[in-house]
Length: 67
Ligand code: SF4
Image (cartoon, rainbow, N blue to C red):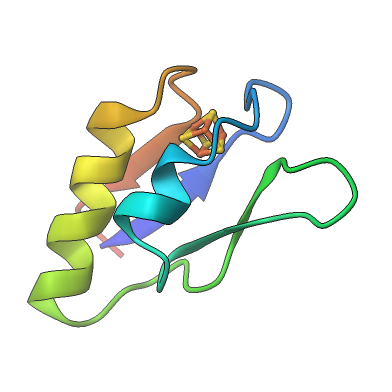
């Protein structure tokens, strides 16, 4: 699995960080999403990343099941 983000779509809500702080963070200057770990390896981290993608209000997170 790998994760992609669209920083142009992100509205800096922070929901993804609350859901999966081991995968997502926010830029200090404007709160826009950034990736901590674009290829989460543990099942738990992958599950949280998928949940974050579902919850993102801007549709800025894409989850790709193949590497
Ligand atoms: S949940 Fe979506 S809109 Fe909010 S910070 Fe994360 S990527 Fe950006």
